[in-house]
Length: 237
Ligand code: NAD
Image 1 (cartoon, rainbow, N blue to C red):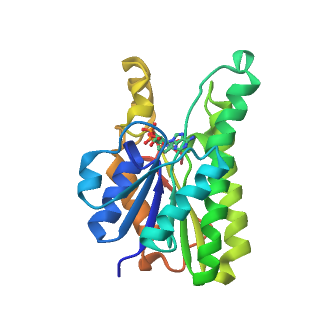
Image 2: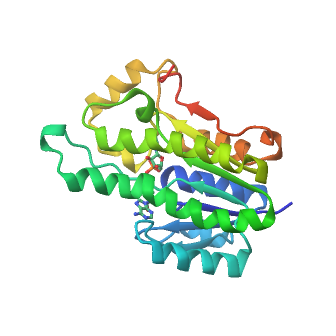
């Protein structure tokens, strides 16, 4: 059955692969993106693309209104949008810290809170949050990012407890290093250093993260909530 699915940050990288996976399923997919143009392949596949900065509650509200008008209540939410602003603590400004938290954690709160309204009415819902292996292991120069990604785990597990009886599940996918724009900033030497620590000895492709997300949103995962699924090639074990 075709569901209304929303993927935040669905115009590129991991979010794009997730949007593709649900569109291939025959679901009604909407994506939000912050800037640029959504890829033509998505619009051609009938995916609804809505510009929305998740740090702005008003833009989140407007985006939901448009999506609900065109696709009905969001039944599956994938909160994928995220940023990095890497810096050693000694040089990390308060803005570097709070802006990453405001996007990755509070931005996720904004989209989840708004989706929850329709899910409560429908008496069902699936929420998948994209965290990171860095949230579990920590990473020098990424204290802001790691704090935001670890925060998502507590957030999801609290909501899994709060809303399980309402038939709404909350799960987390925790990717390792994935071949996307976000990791293009790393030098060849840094990439080699990372790969040397990954048991599967390579980066993930975005589609490998999307496969886990699609599973958690499927009927096959009907009794899974509060789970953190690592898709990290073994890096975090
Ligand atoms: P990316 O930089 O390619 O894409 C990030 C997406 O987030 C973009 O679509 C962007 O528009 C959106 N976004 C950022 N700030 C936003 C805002 N304020 N409002 C709305 N949208 C916003 O990154 P990616 O590698 O595809 O990462 C996607 C998610 O996966 C992120 O949450 C990231 O932290 C996480 N992740 C990535 C990796 C990796 O190695 N690439 C590893 C672990 C986790």
